[in-house]
Image (cartoon, rainbow, N blue to C red):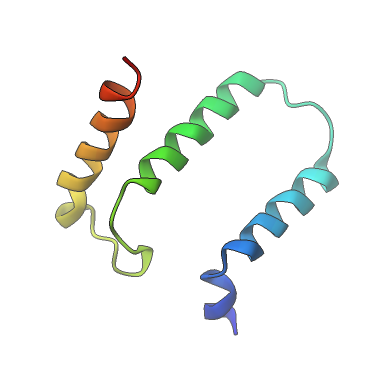
Length: 76
């Protein structure tokens, strides 16, 4: 059951919304948080890998390519 929840996108969205509503308030570093979140989300969206078998050594080429595409090619 925990494995099924860990692979569920809707569970993480629900958890994020719930934590956001519970903690409330206006974050002190809104722009920095948004930029960091976008960097992480855009990088992982281009990576053809699964988190269960994540190996930084084997995936470093894919990670580098994703970073270059996101912040080199797409930002021009």
